[in-house]
Length: 78
Image: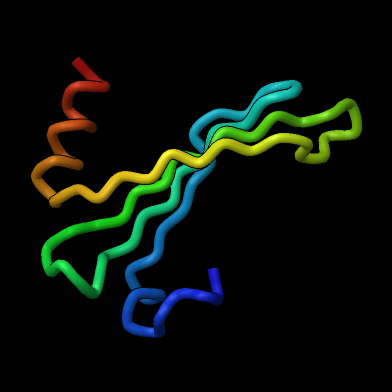
């Protein structure tokens, strides 16, 4: 994601959580410059056409502390 500030770019992580025919869920995360100790977390839902190309995207953006992200991860695994 080249439009991020260089200080933020080094903390940028992305992953595909789920991909199936017609659907993909990705996550992007990076540390915010301000406010300190917060991370921007994007969940990106992509609908794919028959050729596998993206035809619709919905992005859900959250600003969370490391502890909140850890709590989310814990809740997803219990």
